Length: 448
Image (cartoon, rainbow, N blue to C red; front, top):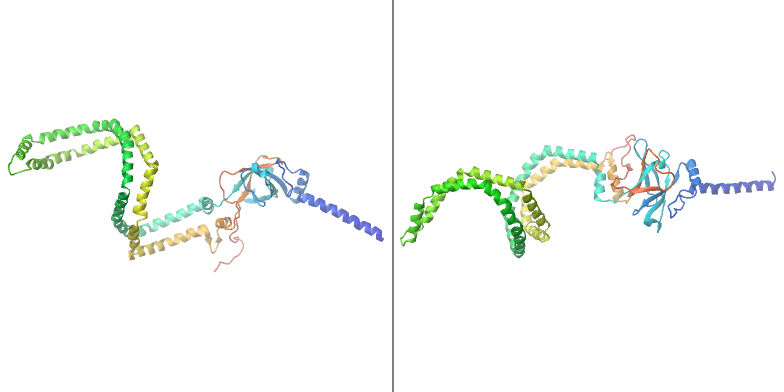
């Protein structure tokens, strides 16, 4: 083969290689880097996407997420495989910026799962903001929460009696010594707020007692009291009248008005009558009085007007900002900021019996606390709990905060156009379970 012909063949091969390279690049990059149109329509090179899917096993999807959302390139797309396990089916390769993102975020995704058809999926956008509630839901799913509750219940049933017997004397002694301390503090606080209490009392006396409670008592309570209490009261009155001696009271009253040396005969007779005549009568009818009182209370508890009026009064008092501030100030000054009360409790819990009780409590509860820690955080033998690893990635590294879930459906949901993504209404943990422990089938040595 002569030189010119060899050079022509080499030039032809280079030319066709260049054409093939450009074509391959176009087929490979058409879906992943195609720009997103402002109207939300799919990239124009659909044949290139189909060619790329059949040649490489992946395809480009157009996703539309309503505002406000925060998407980033690389955010994963998860779906469930035929066995019900979470798998990553794709990820975002580009997101719209600027004016196009205000009405809704447009994004391009690379879908590489051949086991699930994206046209038969509904798409949901999830976000983990790292709040305390989300952390608790991740660390304590229902089944783990039930196991922890069982551990706590078993520990309480086993140790509650001994711990209570050890702690009760310290608590009883502290409460006994606290009562006079709190009483003195309450008196000081009430005296300091006396003007505010009087002003508030005058307002309540006028607005609540005079205008609402007294009419309620006259119209609803007193008729019930007369109905149930009047027969007993009349019976007691008759017996007292029969036992009372007008002669004994009368001549003693006249004698007390004379200038004779002895005085207070009427008072002495009254005290004798109360102790020897009246009190026995009341004692004989005590059961009837209690029954009449019970009937009055029962009738008032069933009275709709009484219940409604008292409920409104209680709610009005609970909503009164001035009363809340005053009560809060008195409680804070009497209890929360009472240094003498703190000293009483600190001194009691420094005693030797208190130290013994604390040691006993620690010894009895230490095993269950360790078991709860193992359930939540993992052990040296099994490694870090996957849920705890999720929390560490989210809280420390700022990972796994946004993802999209493709929910498979039995029917065709989309037909190759823009795939709408709705914002999930319920917060869910990140689907992918991070491998925090060695697989069981792999041999591993326990840590020393």
